[in-house]
Length: 324
Image (cartoon, rainbow, N blue to C red; front, side, top):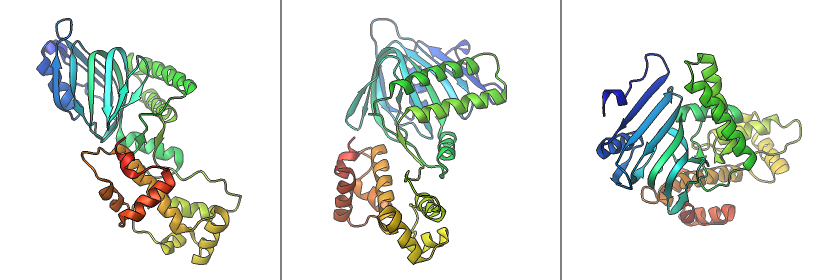
């Protein structure tokens, strides 16, 4: 890789870098290192091999382009960031837990985060936006009033056409800001926030949320109890600790749940944990995780009862979810 083909990030928060060359090994090292990859190999197509990769942005969000003239395969597992990508030329296929996803020109798709998957790209030109995981998770939590949690995007979802058009419009606007002359820090911050918010609006996902339940006025303590359950579901909380957090007696807590939600605090907590198990199963790889280990991590010690409750809630077995 020649000096002219690579540039170091500037001294301020903005990064501007470009890499390119004609050696397959250089491209393999760049892509496998940048995307936590393994098993990469490249095969020639019709013309001589070349690649180019550019990065513009900062620690919270970067706009990237990628192109190479070859057929490249491998497995990747992006970590600590969320990546959305769309191709402008070529052929791109991702194999996610047995689901083969064919990328369409101009149509964005989310890379799974923390989940290893295979890819096969041929003569691809590609645009990408990388979001730091902590940044996007904090923004998602601000929108829901919850605590930052890992986000799980549904790579099989059909995107709403109106939302997709807005996504493209916002990306064009953000790109003009980030790729032009050095943007003002405040302008850059607003551009990042707009891009991140639009991504959350466009791509179906699971994350920090309190179930949207229509409650009559005067239920602030019940709302507090629900928020406490969602924020502390990974902990060994009890009905007593929920009541204490909400400022209710045990009897008052039981009455509020039964009268307003038709359930008990214990059953509600179990449902929240089942939802979290499902989110983790969707994000996991069958080669790296088991249903039993994930279920136990969320407090489900009896595999038979867990499986029955899971099927009742989601109409499929947990092993089926894991293989998606």
